[in-house]
Amino acid sequence: MEAKVMNDKAMDVVLFEERVCADGKRLAIATLNVPATLNALSLPMVQLLTARLKQWASDPQIALVLLQASGDKAFCAGGDLQQLYQSMRTHHASAAAGDCCANAYAAEFFASEYQLDYLIHRYPKPVLCWAHGVVMGGGVGLMMGASHKVVTEATRFAMPEAAIGLFPDVGGSWMLSRLPGKIGLFLALTGAQLRSADCLYAGIADYAIPHASREQLIAAILRQGWSISPFEAAQQLSQLLHSVAMPEAVLAGPLQEAATLIDRLCEGENWQHIVQKLRDHAYTDPWLQKAAASLHKAAPLSLALAWEAQRRAATMSLEQVFQMEYVLALRCAAHTDFAEGIRALLIDKDGKPQWQPADLQQLTAAHMETLVAAMFAAPDWPQHPLHDLAQPEVSVQQNEHNEHINLEEQAA
Image (cartoon, rainbow, N blue to C red; front, side):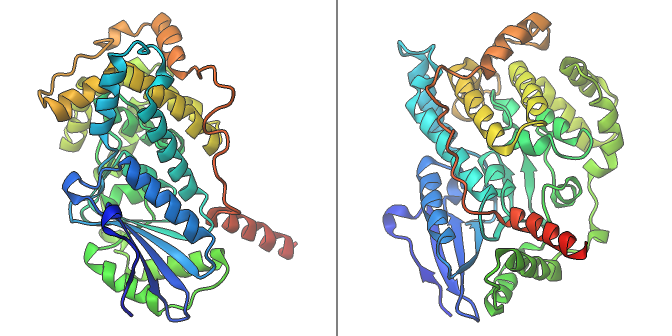
């Protein structure tokens, strides 16, 4: 049946469709549609996605949601750094430069983005994220919460925020702190790129499927009759994805091969020693060499923030992590490094950011206790702007947890 297109000219940065399945239920499709900017996530895109996902969550005829992107290069390469840069430049030049909450655009952007990411994490229906091409920053935030995460032969997954004076946000601290061994810390410090095999190995993705099979998969979804139970619908979707997934036997990746070495180099409680070990090791693998080289370009403060955020996130709930990251993101927007990193990478493109502090040696233990601690300190708000993160009825993941409990009780 022909797709029901629901966008208009003013809102074509995200395209929305509903396609009718064999039993009359519908597949909802949201397509990021700014391929010229690698589908970088802007505030209007966030707002459109949030509104439509909430509408679909309450529509009993919507069985599942597909989140994808236009173009062959990227699912989503990050956030709208150009707008953030302009807002930071204006804020830094204002009389309120010392007030991290005075940058109204940054405050709205990060709050809206994190609320959207959290909504996906807690979505009450299956969400299939087709993460084809570049997946970084804001794209990771969209992908991470999906119940079914698909990578392809072209996927390039990374969280290189330390290279622009930020830290792995969008819930990244929560996700990275829960990866096997020291993988999460390694990825946060180096921004190393992963392909599909290593995304599967690390547990970042659930399935690797050839991009050419997407239409075949959608056709199979439309032929399916879908259970009214979100948990059972999620199981049905898992079976379909498994039927077109690439055999794991043909997959291999450098992260998996280097996992033991990464665990050894990233062992310890002193982040500066870890960075130094990663820098100084004599690598033979080109992928590891490139990852280690990135540490020479990263903002020292961002490396410290990535370490500390991940350390704290390990014992926090998802809600608490988003609240912590929101404070930290606003502090970064008020600090000079974030704007300087964007300038050097995207504006002047000279590749020569002037970080403050300039090197690891300036981040002494005393500095860590003052500057870094101050970056995590919440402003004097009457209540946190993300205190009321929207929580739909029950997520698909929670349904699965409850189903296991019910089965155990029946067996007893």
